[in-house]
Length: 173
Image 1 (cartoon, rainbow, N blue to C red):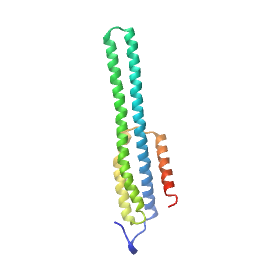
Image 2 (image 1 turned 180 degrees about the horizontal axis):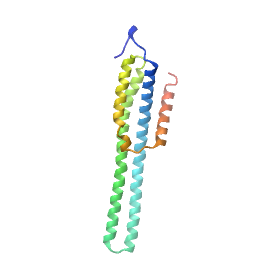
Image 3 (image 1 turned 90 degrees about the vertical axis):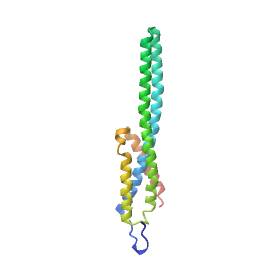
């Protein structure tokens, strides 16, 4: 609820800081999971190409030394199975990272609206909105450490970009 007139209570510095940090944190995570999805997708493709190449080379080598079709077929099938499993593993992780990215991107708009309203809403309302967004954000990323890999260098890059973007955007505000 927006407060107006003489009854409007200015947001406290602590509340403004909580919302600012929530905005930055969400943007940093959004960037991270977007970059991670792209990186995992590329890794999946490289693994698939590399595994197929290695399997083909191994198959052709064995075909020339062992005329019997049984060992060659077994090796070829195991190489194909290994390729499929490796591809699926990274493709699934890329898909999960992309899903987290999309969820955080949707939530990012809500953080931006909350930040835009920081001077026109009372402290209690802002804290309630911050709490709601923070709780929903925690639900989005709570399983992520068990489902996708962590890249500290990519995380640092993502958070630096978010900090720089928002600092530049509001430098004159």
